[in-house]
Image (cartoon, rainbow, N blue to C red; front, side):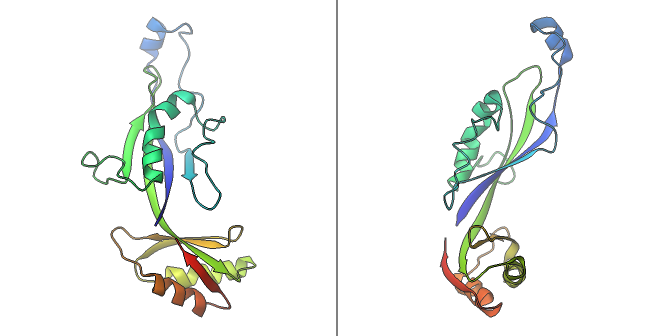
Length: 181
């Protein structure tokens, strides 16, 4: 099983009374870096490692300081917040800016990376996607032609057998599963 982490901005607050009383710029306003609805996906598989590049301008340093430990835990497949949230794969957190905090939803996304030979075009990708979506326990599938793999996201608590994935892919066309991580 592999893991990604999805971070979604779910709210922003602005305490203008505190800004007026305490900030050098009393009219700072809400956080200019994030917008409600912004999504960021972090991954560490197949040569990708977006976690370590996050400090290169893709995240506010103040927010990154607050949420990076949860993202790192998710990427390792750990419980982000056991017995605190109703789903240990999820956490609600915010940055430390006391006058304009941003609230984040941090989710661990579990998936199986099915490495496939023989996919050459979007039509191939669609055949593989449809075949894998038909396997019992599969919630969704994302085919990445550029990486030669399909990311199979299971339903919560589902067990998906490697043999079922191999059979589905190989019945979809002239494709060969070369590994499942």
